[in-house]
Image (cartoon, rainbow, N blue to C red; front, top):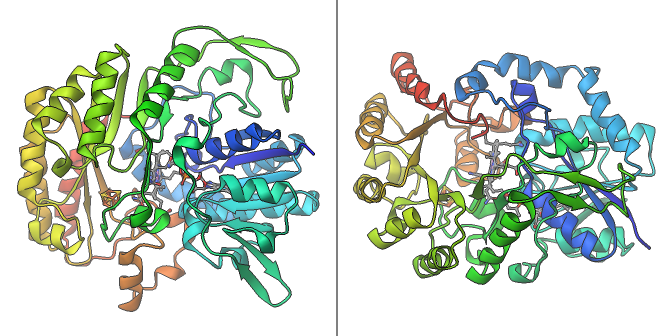
Length: 478
Ligand code: B12
Ligand code: SF4
């Protein structure tokens, strides 16, 4: 029997005075898989706003007090607006994607949905649900949690298989939680491309504002940086790489179906639109490879870049990388293949700090990588952080000096938040830092509220943060 499923991206940037209008690939991949198996799965982005202007990073820092107020007032109309939309969708299964910062929002919304429609089955998946094995104990409105990849587990849930028999599912039994471990790794090339059309709750005009140009070509990261949740979520040794052919195929699909022409949508299994409509997708001019390290396998990435060039794709794109996974040939190929931005995590200008955070990369590697990109004419964003547990005021001064020295095209300067589920989180907890007492919604890196360092002077921190003026041009969801 075909089931109606709504997959929800919870509100986050809206509370900070910005918004997020792009497609969330995790739930989009699950929706595509469910639809491929004959179900009617839709994407509801509760962080979407009918606006084209984004806040810059400075505003995101400043909005923290107003942001926390939303979570303290469950009667705020925004919660009821989202609850109403979920119920109006007519879905009998609702799935929420979760970063740690989203858990309180998911709690509030799912309890409201449960109170009004107890028969709707609600599932949490994504990073936080994978890392926190007891998340169900904290979320009374949620029926099931899924750990790691959600496609197959979600399919089996909606098709009525007993949750106790599904790999990756956590459910409740009379005694406590029944945890079936992590879902099995999916053969990534066999998955359908993410859903890019069934956006619930948007008018035809608004659908033009959804950025559908995100592509995931790698699931996971083989590195071990101790502040990062990715290796713990995906497991380092299980990193999955899509074939170059499959990546190029998805790029071509984007170009042909979403970038270059008016598109006919067929909503024959529609949740919110009963007619065909003609739409032009507007905000799709740059592909964003969301992979943690797009260049991690040099031969693979060279093959992808050469295919982009040989097949004359003529598409602009951006990616995340590490400087130690660049060489001159890669940088040249990137420039020729349409790369308009490489996002590089430099984090610190102090080799001592880089060692402490297990970055496995030195300042020298970073200088060389940045220079190769400069020489090839590929613009890059430099990501820096401060507030690492062992960082001193002098270390931060080195970072400021280094940040200016590398002369990046864009900067993103953050204050460390020890993310839930990372090595750093557990190390700090062992040292007596009570991170578990912090509200979930504090776990993002623009707050400064999670500062675990008392060695850095306020004046140096201010000097560091003032470099953020260079970000004026950037969209506020970095
Ligand atoms: C792209 C990206 C972004 C983008 C896009 C986010 C989006 N909404 O799609 C942007 C830049 C906007 C972003 C923002 C943030 N991000 Co981010 N992001 C990523 C990144 C690099 C890739 C995510 C991705 O698309 N993966 C590909 C898809 C296919 O995987 P997936 O989403 O995990 O989904 C799979 C499973 O998790 C599961 N699943 C997911 N959802 C659901 C739902 C259900 C119902 C089920 C059953 C299963 C399921 O199944 C999916 C398919 O197999 C990850 C790192 C990583 N490699 O995972 C960090 C990451 C997820 N981000 C992180 C963080 C912290 C943030 C921010 C808080 C940063 C900040 N501002 O301070 C914000 C929060 C945004 C929000 N909405 O709350 C952390 C999360 C850590 C944590 N413990 O919470 C990560 C892991 C990076 C890190 N360094 O640790 N992010
Ligand atoms: S910071 Fe980057 S390189 Fe390090 S573990 Fe995370 S995703 Fe991998």
